Length: 291
Image (tube, rainbow, N blue to C red):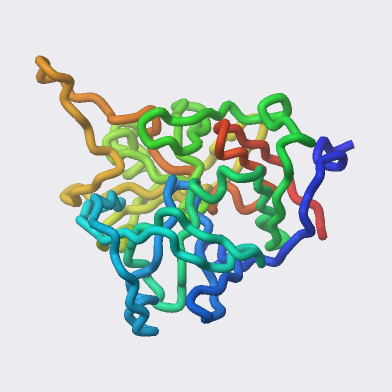
């Protein structure tokens, strides 16, 4: 019997999968629309293009540094902002601002809201629900090595690439690619040439950038194996923030800022039901059955 059968859960609610991103119905400023669920972000945000399209003027509380994939920018933030999410009235204590591709997307829903419950995303059947912690201990039933990254406070999971490389990556429902990894790792393993990488463009929270993509024969996530998974890396001359390194005081040696070495996204997760407890950094995967 599935461990989720005995848990106290909400009803399944429909979601849309658009370019690998999970979209859920939301209402903001009386306008019905969709928002992106992004486990790769530990804070929620409002889309600049949505605000501009509907001429919504929010009073900014101040400015903060927003780190996107390709660029960091000073952006306004807002406090005590109401919205309707998952069919429930919600008030965001803190809401940053990001620029997303579509002006119809309202919010980016991040870890601050997702910490409130355990969430379950059924990718193949395009539905989701939430579960109560008092009826389910995800720490006990987690079947993928996973934990909180102390630097980003996001959930990271351990994967194996092509039976050659173990890697800790951020579980990112906002990423369309199966994996984002450091270009230097792909080059070291010879994957860019062997798997015929092609050029493309991608958009982060603040800017667009040049990338290369290829298909990796196998990716293992816990007990499961995915095949022909899409992998993305930044182009050779493209600056990025994801793999930024810091220098330890008194040393010239550089090291990654956190444990995560990439992103785990839709093209690797699309066959599964993903259950995630953002507060304790644990995930569970199981193949999806027809709804």
